[in-house]
Image (cartoon, one colour):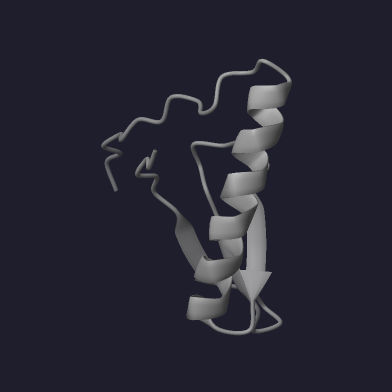
Length: 70
C-alpha cells in the first residue's frame, strides 16, 4: 500500500535541511542536502506510521489550506 503525504523542507540557521510531515505530528528528520532530508523523512514517516498503528492512533491528522491576507 502507498499513500501520498506532503512534506516541508527548509534550511536552518546551521545550514542543515529539516524535513517535516505536517500530517504526522512529530515526524521530522534532517540531512546535509535536500535529497538527504527527503530520504531520511521518508524512513521517519514509515516508522511513525508503524508506531501510530501499533498504538491504535489515527495514522495522520487533518491538514487544511488557509488563505491569510498579507
